[in-house]
Image 1 (cartoon, one colour):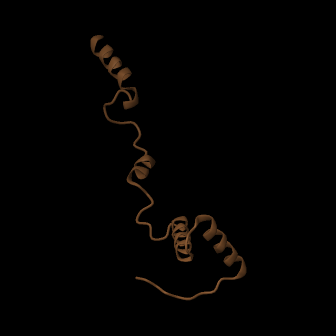
Image 2 (cartoon, rainbow, N blue to C red; image 1 turned 90 degrees about the horizontal axis):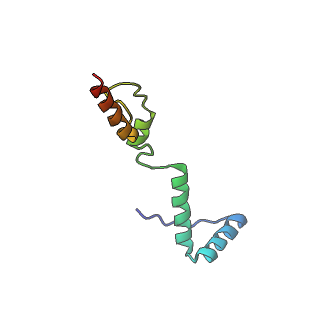
Length: 89
């Protein structure tokens, strides 16, 4: 949906818009559009979901459990410990 509306800016906003248009080499419409999009992202308006599934998983406290001897980041040490325990029986 396209909205066409004439509006007037105060002096400060007009100067800011002119500076942005000159520096970014944008038209008035493009400068306003990009500014609105940036503000929308900053305010998290109409965002589907800012929380990712892994963010929820990280917050879960799964605690001790399972049959793992070591975390996956220390798999080699875990295998070594498991084999030593098995051989000592």
